[in-house]
Length: 250
Length: 358
Image: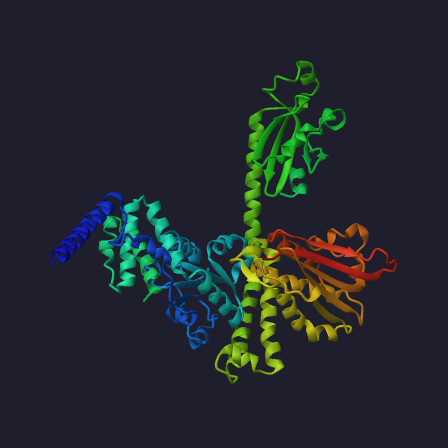
């Protein structure tokens, strides 16, 4: 009996010691080791998105911003894509917040009311705020030397006019190659590093996102990005990218 | 800035592509033209800075001006600060003595003229091609109507509807792709940068040629009964390549070119070989030979060899230039060969290029 008691005391003592050492180690090194000494922060990069292409296709939100009616939106919707059409940029804030995973953008006649450079101005500004935002240049002006920058900055181009299957192939290829959680995680890390956020905080953010994914707990972004509370623009950028990461695992 | 324009406005003698030119105001320094054997000032052409200076082995001052894509070397001058040239030689060459400030002023003027030229060029192309924009808009309507027609056919998905449709629907739909490509090629003529717009994608060059072969199938037999054969040499699978979308123009251009210049009842053969980490594509046809002196010029913009003009009225000499530009963006190039044993004006012509595969 006394042997069992001693065994229990040793086990409890060992667990307590492990608890204290883990906490101390995490505090000193900024790591996110759990009690099994596994690193939950690193695990985020190893997570595999469980979604099949067909499911992903339905979840991805696409907006086509074009003052003409050449983009076959109804055909895409029939095939299960989630596509909206705007004649011009009607809600820039929505674009900026990462509400759309793919933006198909025309260069002329879509944003004169908010930018002197029209579509190019919107593209530049969105890419600056969220480099991971996927933007497809869709315009008849590919011959125009003065607008080359528009095409160079975009992630992909669709020549106008193009047939439906060609457009579909381009969008599917983008979904398969660029719409991946690791790309958004990488962008998030880069953004944090570029804003001089220390390793310890980055690891904590990774761990919080990992927890939100695995435990299916809705994240409280203002707490996770509390260090950026006095920099709302950065906090918005970080939230937009992180929200996209979560989208893969919902 | 083109040579003719630079020549008409420069005050100073200069060298362009190793050829010596006088200006209207000042001739070439006699030492540079006749006495200097070293021509060491030409080293300056290797520089990439907008304005580089050099004092040559004979003591004269040279300046490299880069104007747009052109390099001009102003040579044989003596700066007022030059201490290498003796007083006697300076006295004998008073006309070549200049103040550095006037040269800098000239350089600034040239840069300003160049800036305005580009601005005008852009404005010009914008105006000239607004009609092209309208044409594209009309084409969009044609595209939408064609897609609506296909969409009304039986089937679950658009692809299924098209696959199950009659040949006439398929031909109609395929013509859309041909139109997009033709318009894309016009874009390349106006704006060569458009070659590398978008991201590189995995393509299979054999499949691309196959697609265009089918597209051209009915056209080729109608045209002088010319047939197209596509062969994968040794029957090996041709691996994929990573290319810009513009690579799709290559089969179109080469087959269109071969069809244009093929003798009646002949066969165009496309051979694709899988080599180590690259595919070799050879397009053979029987047609008029390109004259020996023009085998490289056929890749120049708007160039057509005399034999081509006599054989076919079609064409403006852009196809091979576009193809060469596209291949150059993929770090490869197109070569022309002909049957050297054939002494008649018509025989075997070969256009060949390689494409990295993985």
